[in-house]
Image (tube, rainbow, N blue to C red; front, side, top):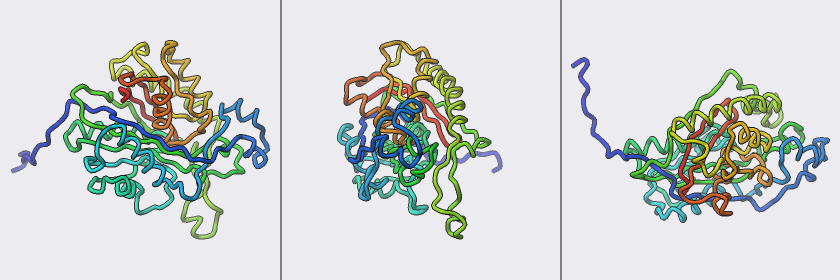
Length: 336
């Protein structure tokens, strides 16, 4: 009958979700600025001054997007105490998995021991981990999942031109992961997110795979209008973070950590200053020796802050992701 809603069954909902464990994987090869400068007519001093980056990691042939995600995921599972077979869904945020099909997430699920879990890739570039956390939180709250494995894994060295002066020094490789589970007390706040497809050319690829197939272009690589991205980020991120704090009913003084996407140290410092964070709030600066690892940067920085004791279990952390799309998202979480 028109207008009648037929019940389709109900799931047992949860009051909220929280991060139960985190893990990270950093490739073995450390690449200092001096190794890159001959190809981009630059210097170690210039790179440090414009980005804050001193070194980054580059993956070898065996350190694939999938392999690094699995390594980080196994560490997150071990820390969380959740068995791999109890994972209901695997979300993998990545922009550098080069196989159009199959997606990387099902392979990660299989190799991590979550063979029965649903799995999918999330393509939101540097905002991908925050977007995936928000999806995990929503699915757990509705009762669709009990445990979700969220990972970010990138081999940016595969999609960056080592001769491109605007991008070659910025990016690195690595992976981070988090296990998210049910909680009687919400440990992941409301997400504030958005996109501006009108600025898609600000961070884009030099050509399409079709152009490569037809022989009209060399290997497509990432291209970025650095000054435009910087202006966009320093204007957007503080307001985005304030809205995420308001949505979580949290003040800067209640935070224990600020973990933005590790795009550039100047952007991190600018955002922290604009927010007026108190001295006790630890600010992630993983970009200095990890570079910009896109969707992997936030979980990698989170794992390091916890491992170094710069932030503790139960501390509130403000996460903010922003990048190609242009995509952006922020939320407040309780650290595991």
